[in-house]
Image 1 (tube, rainbow, N blue to C red):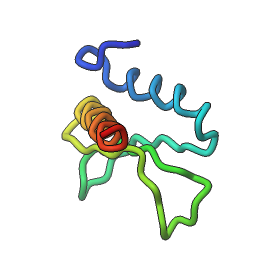
Image 2 (cartoon, rainbow, N blue to C red):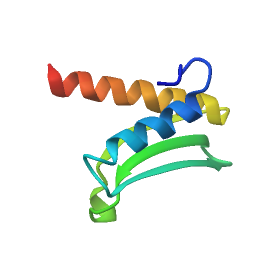
Image 3 (cartoon, one colour):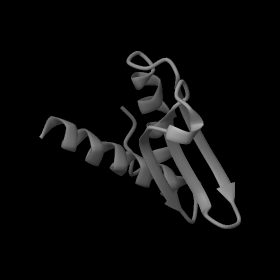
Length: 83
């Protein structure tokens, strides 16, 4: 797998691709908003938008920071499930 410290965007896309086997409706969004800067979010697109289930979410001043933050969030959430 791609080293997240070198290319967090590619690493997040690779992780999304890997998780599609488990959930083919998983959406990945990397976007910019003037109010929130950059964000990277993985969420279940099959659910009602009012009850969005986030797999991972991250924010940052750059796309790299947002994707790195989302990868760390994904690791935290996975650790809680296995604990």
